[in-house]
Amino acid sequence: MVIKEYYSLSEASEILGKNPETLRRWDNDGKLAAVREPMSNYRVYKKEQLEIFPEFKSYFDKLDDGNFVEPLKEYSVLELFAGAGGLAIGMEQAGLRCKALNEIDKWACQTLRENRPNWNVLEGDIQEIDFTEFKNNIDVVTGGFPCQAFSYAGKKLGLEDARGTLFYEFARVVQETRPKICIGENVRGLLSHDNGKTLEGMISILDEIGYNVVLPVRVLKAINYNVPQKRERLILVGIRKDINAEYKYPKPYSEIYNLKDALKKGKLFDSNVPKSQGAKYPQHKKDVLDLVPPKGYWRDLPLDIQKEYMQKSFFLGGGKTGMARRIGWDEPCLTLTCSPAQKQTERCHPDETRPFTVREYARIQTFPDDWEFKGSISQQYKQIGNAVPVNLAKEIGYSLVRFLNNIHLTEKIKISAEVETI
Image 1 (cartoon, rainbow, N blue to C red):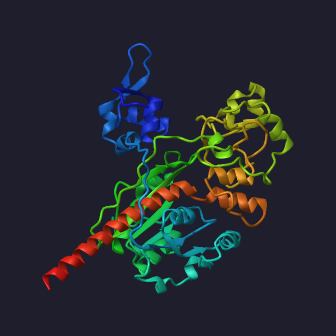
Image 2 (image 1 turned 90 degrees about the vertical axis):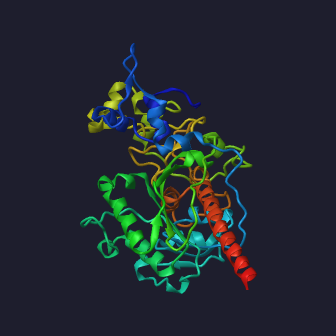
Image 3 (image 1 turned 135 degrees about the horizontal axis):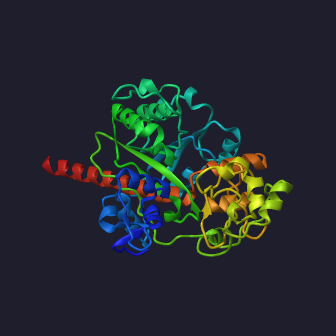
């Protein structure tokens, strides 16, 4: 998309990363009033209206030369809620060393140990682990903590008020280890959870323990970071208050990869996807999905089958475009879930009426083909579906290396200046 003077509702939705229904509501409320085209009465937006949003600049500020930067020294990471290792692999590929990883799921721990025997995997409940041995010996703490609600008491939420939640544990570990920077990863919905109060509380807690959060908190679209999947992740960045260095989110790429790039030999992978086991649809669902064309969904079914398949959902508002959905080769995949055959989140193969296999799932999440997942097929799907896409994690890793390099250079200059004055 090129920069122009007017944008349609769908274009504005894509640029700002907002649901079209949100923009319609903003228009009705006067928060972002659309202009009406004289003939069609369609909503359109002036460039000046959209330029005030940081997402506008980042959308068009694409790059093609990459975020790569070489580490000037060895930097270390402590990862919490590590899962099957998507974030950790990306950090490793960016040149950061994983000093330890914590994960409670035994199958995910087996996956981590199988693929990286040298990694220090701390298996168990984070609430029962003491991390003080890493104090002042870790550069980065990362963690995709599950989003749990906690009460927002008064104007400032304290660390103790969040006790019992997994964000409390994330903050506790940051407080115990004192890294230079911490990265919290979560779903996009955290931005609006409890009208934004949950995120506000998290920012308040990090402030209390000595960390400034980089604002505005950004949601990164995986498709902008060499991931053939429409997945969005909120990235919360906290910098220790005694550190005077600026963190910049990774710049997005201009090229968007699609399902063909994920599963076929090409720019992303040097071979076709390996064959593997996969889930199957029950016969009644297969009979329905057989009727859906590539890039189609439930509205492409005959009306009587729509009503039968959708049941009460047929009469509700919204597009529900993920239901009875068959992905096309020439588009990025929709966000993968932990269970590929469940209703309302079908991601059907373009040519065959079946869910994606385990290795296809892994490719869409940009895991290397030699990364093995342990446990039953359902456990493997769960591990992959919960993961941070590896390529997205790598770009975040580069942004961390750049930040830490700046600190390292500043410290070297300071030491040199002190030596000269002696």
